[in-house]
Image 1 (cartoon, each protein chain N blue to C red):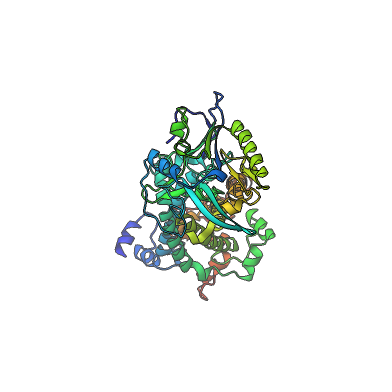
Image 2 (tube, one colour):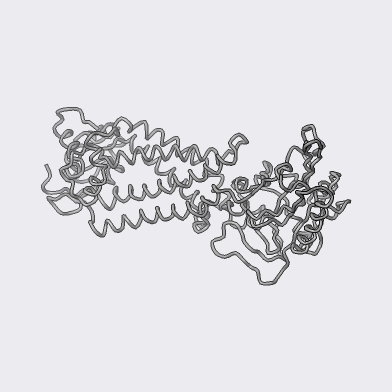
Length: 241
Length: 298
């Protein structure tokens, strides 16, 4: 705990290193001007998934198309990619399971989330017209990302196993279907992650630090997750999803 | 091995046109006349010898067949089939091995640049150095020919003795055939010759004799005369082989669509940023983050 606190010393953060260190073990806590949004373990798991995802991506892209064949050079050639890709895929699946476990209870859709993820709700969100929306700690879009990632990871894992260790029992049709599924799932997953990265960085300043330092500012919380902000500040009831 | 003296028609996973056809080399063919094959297996031995393949232990399956099926170390196999045709009994022999399709599904499925090469003369060859052993070619082949070698982690199959062909020799199997049921030469000439032979078979009581040169894969370099040409499946040959739909859909449609989705997502996000910019708290109008604290906070 002390070690973490020492690393966190910086000017202007007089709220107390000890408090921050404590808060890093938990979340939904106010620390000075900030709110701890993601505890350390959640961030570690998230970045483990991200790391394995990108390693899978960069070892898989040169196999996907020769136009990105130069990426194979990062790992020592296409042969190395072919060997690494399935093993990193296993690591990706394993970290995805951890991530699923840590967030699943917080990712249940509420009626407000269901309104959020309608085409109209999403349009309002992307046009910044939904500032009074009843958004808890995670909005409907984030929850959909969570479920889509879980589904995508399952599709990639199952099809990947068939591709990796083809058995006579699988049959040609199943193997061909696996290529199609793996390819489709990867394309959609990557397209989705591009949106995820954009929203977490450029589009919504102040979001990225919630996954790095674990904290967000109060004004950020008020803007993006008003219901969660009220719950954390008021501390009247245990924060809902 | 790839043959240096030959022109390349197409190469697997090529980014751009891989064609090097400058010279006008003839399209070759190997004709298999199953009606004159006596199942002596001289071609199998010649194949093993020329290609320096070491035979692996086999399994007795109740026929005269050397191996249950093709192997990474066994590229040429005479298949023995017993068939009751009406009151008659037929012993159907077929020489199993790579057909060297004009439209090779293995090459289509292969993700490794230059691992599968089709020469201008029609031979489909494997370059083991470029092969990454992903086994995708297995699913592209309508004839179930490519075999994965556990010892080398690479694919292997008949090369039609491209190393012999490029110096003007016929493949080893053809060289060894004692009945002349294997012939090698210019494809158009061999097709004409095969049609004569088919007519001969028809006159001799095999009314449905035919030449197996399936158009679904653009024709094959290895063409086969079948006495029962209306039933290629009796010989273990697919009736209408083509590059599997799964493979052509995956490579021709899904991959470009996926690229479109990825690029679309990327450009949509750029477009969104240009249109709406970052979403900042109203009170300050400044991007927050870092140590900077918005004024109207709490």
